[in-house]
Length: 270
Image 1 (cartoon, helix red, strand yellow):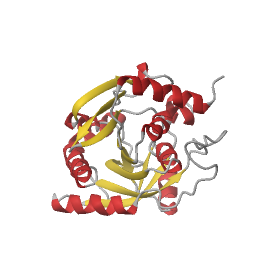
Image 2 (cartoon, helix red, strand yellow):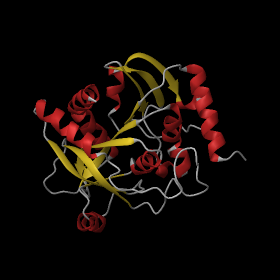
Image 3 (cartoon, one colour):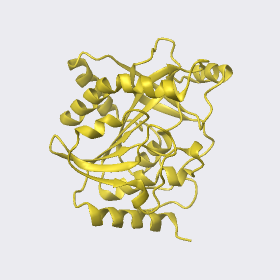
Image 4 (cartoon, one colour):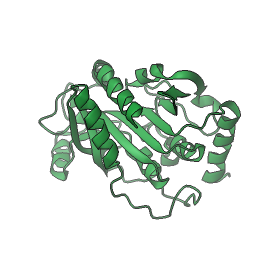
């Protein structure tokens, strides 16, 4: 059986055989937020199914392809859709793209998601800059033999979300007259939504929002030394009896224009 490093290198070699550019910025587009990909110019698209060891999403709202191109003269790669732990994949499988990005030369990861609001001051449609996270999955993508070419055996998870990028995001948003919330993102494995007791627990733990993605990807990005900017689109109130995936996608679509504007101007200002 090939080890993780061999799998990562196989995927890197395949991509380099298709795309010559070397992206320095990677963008992960969460549920209902894939429209940002249409802003990328001079694109080359690669479906996940064509890349060795990349898995395809089974979730509506996640198209499943890498889009390479340019934004404001910068070489970027966007993940239009992601795969999740709750789909039955391993932590190593869902974070394979991030590992590959590291070896392609990506220095900055911008990761977006749709999340449920825990902070009672939040409302659907708010945008939250992630300042920290709480991993409640009981698992880590770094379990197993360490891939030394990517990072250390015991990486420090302090200031994983780059403070300078959060400052830049807020500055850009202020110029656009868009209010940006800040808070801690709690990662629950799903796919079920949270119970009332779990929502109460998350509030006590200091979480402002909760979702079923992002944290495994951010752990791997931090392990590889990337700067990380995490952004949540608050699509519902966590614990609401009316919450459904359809509602999440609809709210994300409504907020997408605002989120796209903020992310684009932030990339332009980098």
